[in-house]
Image 1 (tube, helix red, strand yellow):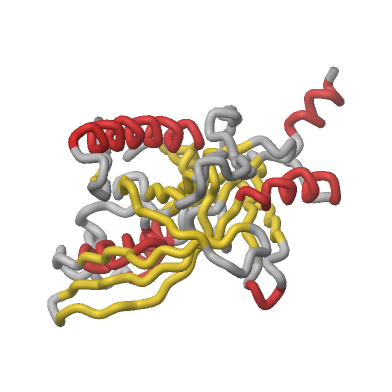
Image 2 (cartoon, rainbow, N blue to C red):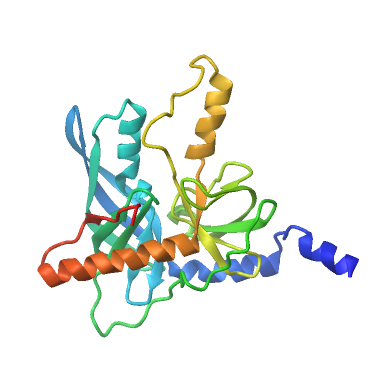
Length: 274
């Protein structure tokens, strides 16, 4: 019994089987290319961007990091004294698998608090179902010391081969919400799915930053302030349960918008307090 208990407590290691189970979800990753219209105090400019999103519904619903879709511009405004910077993605193009021809897409809703954004792929009604990651099929028994595995595709230069990296949970927070904080800074960017060794979804990587107070404390204490910033900008894991609840709220908002005006685009903000 003691041996079995020790084995169960041992952190999961990376091996060929673990890699294969997690890399099998790579078909549910989509490459999103867009043009970002950025409005700052200095005027307006356009920036081309690209990120990877998760297909969470076989009909073509994508879950992305709002930071990757321009949310970082708002964060920069906060860091610069609360200045009002905005960024709106347009000209969305989605690439599935090895496809060279993109599909169109529409930004539906954002949740800045949780760093989420939803995009609907424009497809024919009779198109084949897409490979998707089910947010409801997740594990939640994750605690400090647990290993987790992040999936992301490599650059197109490397054929977008699936890269799986092993990380460890260093802390679990309940404020501002339940979050899994890695023991070391993540190397995967934001919006990447996170799994356990069995290939079950844990959550996705996001950015979480306060509205203000980033410069608090002793202004000359560069080391402590630097560590504080690194805890935030390195990224954390939003549990899949949080993402599933936010998606349900987002669906309710889309239904309300469609009932009011079926032709109107729905780029509403999901309230973090609802």
